[in-house]
Length: 401
Image (cartoon, rainbow, N blue to C red; front, side, top):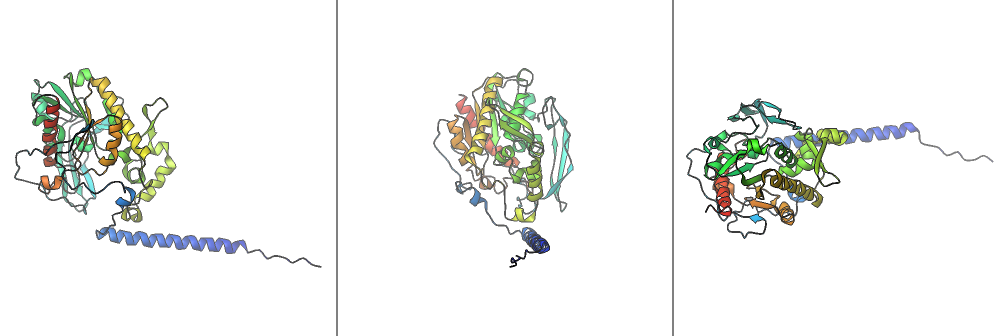
């Protein structure tokens, strides 16, 4: 009696089926990518941000006046308007964001910092890809690798320091020396000597390292004052490294972590610490599909992310006390911040002061010109309005009013 022989499928059929399936998937992805490219060029994009941040309600366009102060929070009662300016820049157009730097800044290493800083004065020009000038401005850098605030040359009688440490919003990307937030803060107050320690593309961890490099005896002559950290929504991503940040431009930024003894340290760049993930992010982030559907990995921020960010900010606060002998450290929320509502509860838990401008309708307050056209950084008018209101609040707290 012969046993029945079971026919086994030929390996070729399996391989062919798998190969055809992969080709179909790749072909479908290519078609979808091309369709997304066409939709992006037409200006049609879905708004999926609310799916990732359901906790944030849409209040960024409402001007909040007279909010109560909390133990940590400092809320401006109302915006104080600077003198009027007749000329305004052209309206900001979000459809023409692709630009290129024509005249790059003079970068280099300062002291033992692990990243480049602008170390020499420069003239920086930037154009959109269709040839329109985005900005053309001059930058003067002093011997301590910080940007000039011109009034400081006449500030011998000012009794308190006002140190701004942050990113390009603080530095004044696209603006001249006399148009930045630190400059206007010194301009509208005779009591504070304003210092600009802003750095382009900085994360909160970078700010911590930058402040550590300051020599108090050499760089800051006043004995007391304020340290202000201007926060924008991008700072969380620059610290935690999602695909939308690392995959597009920040793969060579420092990767920070909290050590066992509670200190914030770095162990290299995102690319050197997690090379496979970083290269995958870089591959995916620039596809039309990811850009059109605004896909990010991780898809949503977590409480652990916000906790880590707050711990970094807390160490900046501790450093301000140790290095500058001041308890006056505060986080400044720029107008339009969508994530201030997530961060504020953590700041209050850690007893960190904050100054909240996030709910200002800065578009209305600046007559429709809150940002540099084709760029997105704050305009001179936005900095004026924030600075005048900020120093008035600080002067109240310091007993000058």
